[in-house]
Image 1: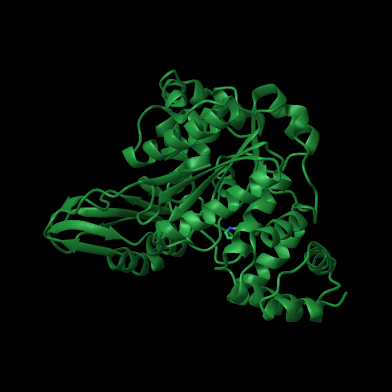
Image 2 (image 1 turned 120 degrees about the horizontal axis):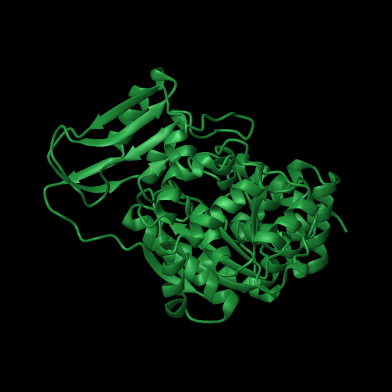
Length: 433
Ligand code: URA
């Protein structure tokens, strides 16, 4: 078999065989196929697409390119949750302890933030002492003891995706449905959970800009996961505006704690209750409507918050910071962004706000960059709110005062005002199983 012939076949719109797809994935992972041929191949897929069978084969070949976790010793209620990316998206920090408090088994590997979107592993690492790298025996032991562990992705998880994603990022081939679906689902299959709930975001802060595009991606991912024997659920959520109030690592941990203590912003609470209900419903084979009262009770009883504390303690974190979040260190500079005019905020571009938080130090442009856990943004006003000239719209937190003007201008540039109130935004568009 020759890579040249496989590229040519896909370039001309042909359907690749399972063997051809495996040849490409194996060869590229081992370094036998060079970047220039893999680039041509991803570009051919970008233009010609893939059939559902080809996408499934690509996903399975990528999943098998490295370690495949076997979580079967942990029972049949292992559940994973994945977001396709967002701004202010601290949902995992909230839903994972809720699900574990209700008897689901959360043995989860999460990613770091890149570009304008944040990552759960960075947020957890902002808790002093918290370890995101655990030896397998400790990871399994902790999940057996307390039902939950969230760690970083192991070095040898889906090496094919690591190489391919890096290549796609620099060859303008990220926005391809079969390539996104196989990238995400290969990691979830290798992660080993039996139940997988996907939060497919759409809007200005997401990969998929419209609910229709998000639905197409969600359907493809659900189909591949189901074919691979996992129980899949996808929920399409709105990421036109950042989720909740806080963006930035410590700031998001603080907000997650608020929600688990029964407070917190309504949009975040609503999305978390729905996603946690879907996680429980999948594991215990009931409807989300039946699961919802249990989820609300896990919050109001304090059981979900207790579960977060147990996880923090088990992974070496200083639980005093979770019990009293005022102990977290604050940024040197705090700056209030004021509204330039009266009116209703009718849109707030989530991607721009996410980039502003990176400018302040909360995120990284490349995986090697270091981040300032304290940095970020609190949005005191959001889409739908009425403001008057001079009202504080956002508070910026940073240790680098030279970044304040740029970030403040970006936030103001992310806003659209109107004299008329607009209808409320939909937060959850659809659930797909
Ligand atoms: N997230 C991933 O993990 N892969 C993609 O291709 C896009 C988003």
